[in-house]
Length: 220
Image (cartoon, rainbow, N blue to C red; front, side):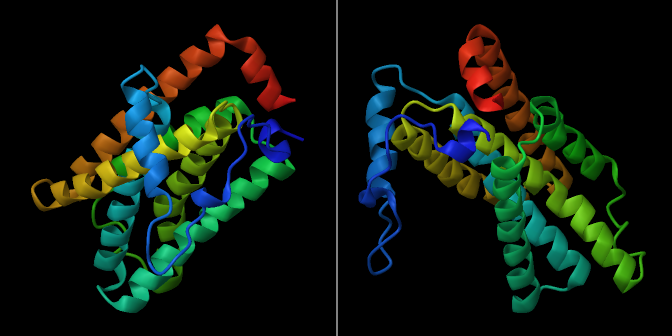
């Protein structure tokens, strides 16, 4: 069982970190705590970049599927449900049988490269059954590996409140960055996602190399 599955994080999450209330965001104090900690050199660049990349990837996925299947509420609902399902599958997989470190490292990079290299109108030229399979492969595979990368990073965290806070701040930045899609095309948006994951994964790999004990704890 991995450290992720055993919940090895040393600082337990409290009730204030759960989304509660009448539409309020209970995670906001966690994000503010991360901002306050940044003044003391406590920036979690990996979680921040993972948050940025995931939200941009989600924005691109919804837009791409709307172009392929039609801009309807049903399409958006199916895409969001598929993204959440893929996140759940990745999380369960990391608990049940952790994906090797190298696969999680290369997964988002290679899947994003495949999406970038795929012709823009490739989905439109396919029949509905084949289009559905291609949509799953091109759109949701990067989401799966992005979730495994998050799991690997979170399994090593010493201060999960700050980790969630920086991921939340990254998500906010990624959500705002999604408006770039109105100025640049969707494929250019993928380059930003790829760059964010490359920098984040490089930082994660560097830190794991410098601290073998943390890496061993996750993989045992």
